[in-house]
Image 1 (cartoon, rainbow, N blue to C red):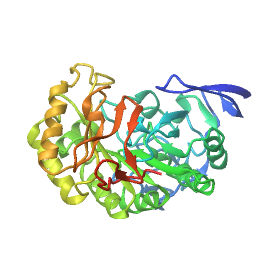
Image 2: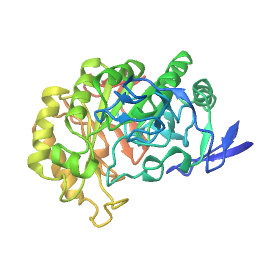
Image 3: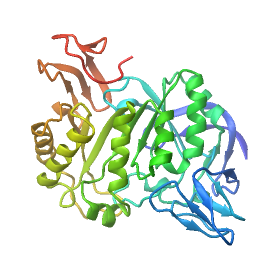
Length: 367
């Protein structure tokens, strides 16, 4: 149905009003039929998807693992192109990106679907469903970019679910946003093949990658994916020169061993560099892991200590509002540069990309 409506935003409590576009009420029958990228034809009208490490072989009228790419008579199509389920105006700190335009707003979008199945997913209501099972909005790429511009958001973020699975919509929207002077950032698990990942990187200004653990066994059992493609994507991101930050959700009893965190930190210093910010985030019981306790704050603090011992210079504690390790400190003079409480910036002492106290250059995108 056509309507002027409010968009109620997932997880923010914020409401954008007065947007004028076509919105479909759930269940939503009008899925897109946009030709997908990254696939090849096989005999008998089958196709092989080349987007992510699953390499799904899909028969006619069937879908890949992500549930949003379908074979129609030997042609692979995206069902979610221009069909976002969530539109939000977030602080960029929520992503979290701490060294990328601090204090700015990010117009954030997502479609239904994901190519992994994390047992701890916080957005499972939209990531672990088929696109026809949730309400969406029909907004083409140029309109999406103009909405960000209209709401004075200097950043457009592809987030919440897994942007890799709506790559066609993301790339076209990013091009439109760039024409308007809007920066593009992707928030991803990076379970993706190198060729599409390089195309995504070329369209982005910053990348935040969720590194779920530093264990293939964890990825197999808890994520239903593979670790190595994610590590490869981190390396490609670092080599691309695009701004990169890493989040590691610390889950009690599953990926909180300090030996694992030490190995991950050493790998990060060697392959992404000591300047890459790493966020150790607190886990809370949800989705399929409701039987575990929240992460002890002391575990996060010890993980931060271990990472800094291994040479990482910017290490944060996340999901603990008000913790001193939310603040960015100068690696040289140790004075607080950006003081944060939750998603709010209380103080910013970075001037022209440098510490205002000692002049140390601070890596990031500041203006």
